[in-house]
Length: 331
Image 1 (tube, one colour):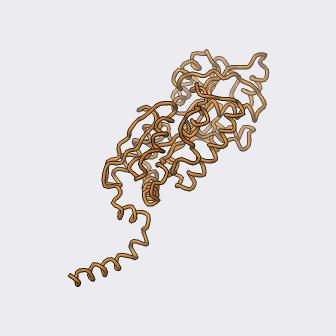
Image 2: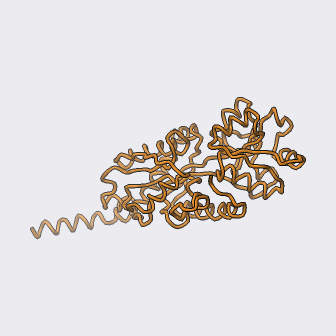
Image 3: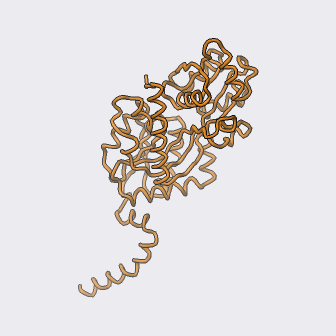
């Protein structure tokens, strides 16, 4: 018996340098995580870009962890209902959530969201960007081919020009309000319930301008029904390389990027966070994954826990300030 113990101790010592080398992943494996199904909550309906990107990453993550990762759609109030449940839930690493910009900002827009985005999540890894684009109806505004021409047109109108977005407090709404503030011009927001009806009416000519997520607008830009005049991201978008950024068109420092990433409840073990982050990083390095995500309108973009955490705080503060200044509330 004694001899058996010594042998075990020697084996453990021999393995020690290995353990130190791959601390994050080995610790997670040592703790037995994951030894059962992992749930990835998506606080939006099935079929949208957040859901599709989450399913692509979730499936690959399951393969790499050797456990099933189930995507659980729990939509409602911009994702705030699911987020409030997550932060109060078990922090054992078996429930994760895709945090996207609407859910990040919901506590500024809904009085009783039930969580504080800057404090209540454990950031794990960012995994995509959703570019946004300003489009105009080319029949209604034939001369508006760039951002400065749109602003000149808006300033020349006797009554404020209308523009639309996916809804009150939507990212397109906030992005245009930021641009109006920087550019010193006015336009009247006409909110719709979702991107699809807003785009339909922009194409139909009921509203001349929209700040839209790229995935909803892209087929109509490609068919010529809508004209793209600016993208909100700091760099141009690969699917519309000729369309300049807002920053390139006279608004240095302008940045409006909607994104999504994996978060966990507060107190989730660091070993689990590190393991998921390192797996997500490798998943996103795969060209096939990048292409599949781009097809859904989400562009693969990895940030680790620390960088993602800083992004969460920065965007929560920055857009929150604009929401308060403009008195914006969700409907």
